[in-house]
Amino acid sequence: MTGALALCRKEFNAYFDSAVAYVFIVSFLVVTYWFFFRGFFLNNQIQMRDYFFFLPWVFLVFIPAVTMRLWAEEKKMGTVEILLTMPVREYELVLGKFMAGFLFVFVSVFFSFSLPLTLSFFGELDWGPVIGGYLGTCLLGGAYLSVGLFLSNFTKNQIVAFILTILLSFVFFILGEDIILANLPDFWVPLFSFVGLGKHFISLQRGMIDSRDIIYYLSVTGFFLFLNILYVARRR
Image 1 (spheres, helix red, strand yellow):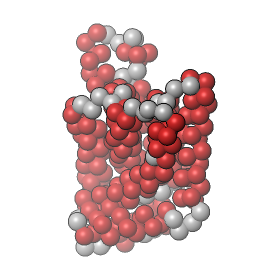
Image 2 (cartoon, rainbow, N blue to C red):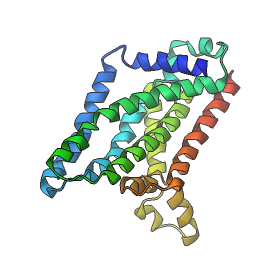
Image 3 (tube, rainbow, N blue to C red):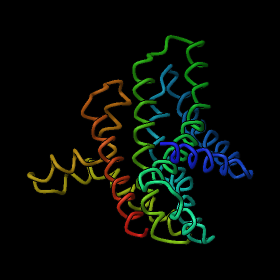
């Protein structure tokens, strides 16, 4: 794992080599806080339900912006050939880039933890849904990241990678939505309900931490990382 950690450190530092990372983090916090406070003062309740309700939709734009450069930029700059000749295994290359993206997303989400801490001073906050919501956020973020990292392999254009990731992540997210399930034959409903990324996130944000939801997200993340490893190995 030495190669993966070295690549992770390199990619993570690359985010902060320019002002782009700071703009991303500030924009993420401003947008998510706005979605939260627009309903907080109307509901007059000490809870973070609205925050976690909108977070997956914000992630649909934020995370593709994080992953679009991970492989596409290497291909555009012509450095991917150099990277593939390094004495590291394919899984280390993929994991290094994935961990860098995940760490960047984690740092962005970590700054938002000031929100529940502040709410706890104003009243009694139910920490169960908060913990479940943040756990679901990390798991959902990992799934989105693995999808974006995989799709970034197929193009030199970061904008194309950005759009493809949004589209595929959106499809996976809405598969379990009621509007989709209502128009399916009955025998397809359990499958689509299970595959939908959104359904599992709803359970976690309610504070119901079920091992099946955790295993599902880890499986989706692992599946797309595995596809990524196969693609890198084939290119190599």
